Length: 193
Image (cartoon, helix red, strand yellow):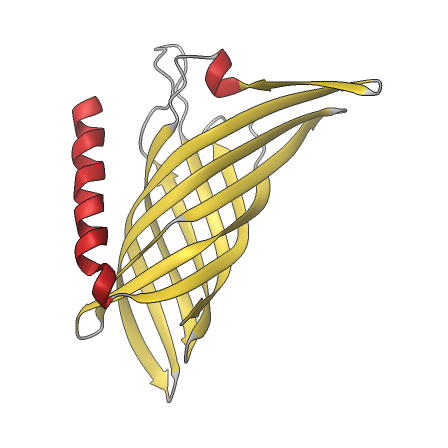
């Protein structure tokens, strides 16, 4: 499993470094939601923000990628919250179709590499609170998630809106008793410089 992660990260770094010079740089921000595959789990809501890049390959086909910071949180019980910080590295193949002058619609699909920074469980007790980072407490829990996503968007000149959903592919817990996969939804605005 570690060799797959290393190969994936090396390939991603190569693609990003080769195409950086010819990429159209942008900024994306918007709503984020993550939800585990547990049927009783509730979604965690928050936001994402970060730089994006769009490299034309040929004709209407392009490669879209970026580095997005995610902050999502949920109150799971009175005075008890769960907060997650992570980075997404989406790598999408997109097809763009012009509608009128300056207006186009696009669809995209591809992997998303999610790297967890902190998964904090906070309990308030009176005026005090106790916070535990679940990644540090449970050593069987993985910070790395590979997702497969698809979505669509609408662009007018240099700005637009996009919507996408990522399906978790990896079991993020080493225990055989726990099957923990994490899915994500994003709706955001973007501006290309």
